[in-house]
Image 1 (cartoon, rainbow, N blue to C red):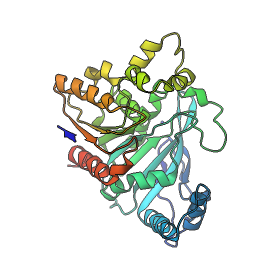
Image 2 (image 1 turned 135 degrees about the horizontal axis):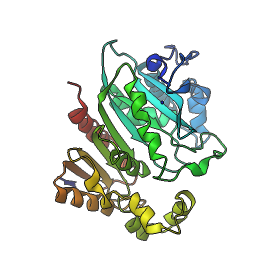
Image 3 (image 1 turned 90 degrees about the vertical axis):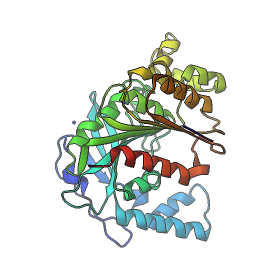
Image 4 (image 1 turned 60 degrees about the vertical axis):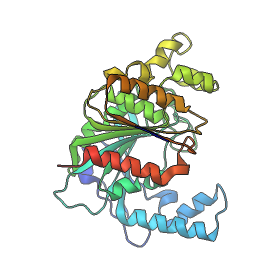
Length: 338
């Protein structure tokens, strides 16, 4: 059903071999980022290591091993994938960068800022997830940049500053701090920046868009836009809010409204085109969340499109090809370089 601040090391060029394994990466000195590393490292350093890591979760058939190896080699041959540190509010935050490898020296590409879901203890997205999720955008000539957010657990142990993540609070600055980094990327078009978020990341996308007019398009996927109403559907989320939102119990209504776009959607830039994607079978965030927001956008006569996938769950994996096409078409429509 469908309803209508250290400069990034000179374009982050990593030295990668064509034999399925990453070569040593030597980033140049920078001014807005540091500790730049190729994503093709550690358990992701070659196809065999990647497959071995996947099989720690569950055994794979020979066919799936071949597919995983083919995917890895395609990613390695075609896409630059990097992790980097940057500083926001005195805290070190981990970010990521992906781009097509074969770019003309004078070419300027549109950029998408991706916002992940989850919280500081669960949600940081690994390299293979990024490459899989963003491959079509990269193929179509986009750069993708994102933040893991402050306090994110990046290894086995929780981050010592895990509670610096306020689930839609101060860490929104981690998203906005990517803009001056994008401005210094020699092959990024700083006038063509879009923002995309999934689940909690959709909330983050709206919160960031509320504070800047830099975004030329926004995509919100499976997001909570009226969190108070969502608590009635999924009351177990109260424990998450108590953990991550400062002074939640003392100012519950006020804090949830701050994070709920339906209460302040009129504060977004008036000409910001918004694409809402949701699954009718979503068990984590109700479809009503997107419907309520669409009603507000309709009432305000804002540019938007709402797509509800009848068999889609929270991840929309059941409609992956359709979702990817919607995302690419939306960003191509509004971010295509002129």
